[in-house]
Length: 236
Ligand code: APR
Image 1: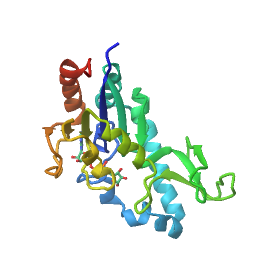
Image 2: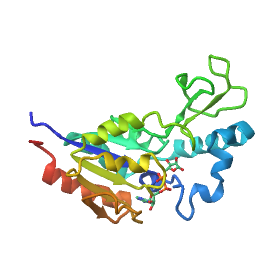
Image 3: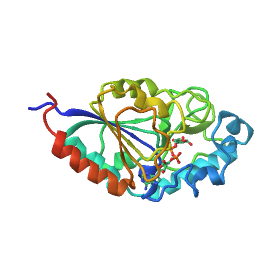
Image 4: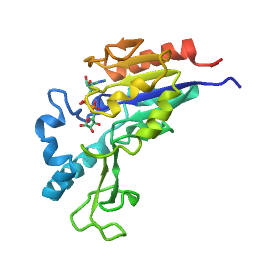
């Protein structure tokens, strides 16, 4: 058996845009309609928990009706040819539903809830979270989402994976939110690096980056075909 090359893929909201899930910072993005300070910080939840729960209950509803697109599905297919790890900033489950098997959710998962007092008490959350819904430690349940100003517990795992990347793909992220935006800098200098996005963010700091200026449903399958043909077998 030939050893598969290690392919690490960082995804952002752009990969789910063509599944009908709004991005954050495009002109029709979520942060045009909501203030981050009102719905996505620990203080927001202390000040107006109902507003924050409503916001994420609505997100959950939207994600439930969305379907994985050709971008997600192609990444799942790539597991046949590469040792794939997906590091996603997305809270949706479209990578899972497309069939990818090794996914790190940097910013949490919309279909999970957790205790406000104990981050290790995590539950499946298929439906809404309401005020008065309690974890087993008696504290209010909150969305299992990493809010602004909170730690990113999966970051260490994500760095470890990126450091071992032979190929790095970045798809559909404005690279404005740290620490996720800094991940590419942990990839080996000589790793092959690609970025797929219809609006290229500031990337001058990332060495040897090839840009694919396209939507995910077009750019990802095209790039995948190239990678399979050129590198989809032996890693030695
Ligand atoms: N295909 C690929 N990329 C797309 C598409 C598409 N069809 N449509 C838009 N994009 C790109 C945009 O050009 C932009 O670069 O997706 C990116 C979306 O950027 P953001 O809205 O900033 O989303 P993201 O980078 O994932 O945000 C990071 O910010 O608010 C937080 O926690 C939230 O995880 C999120 C983080």
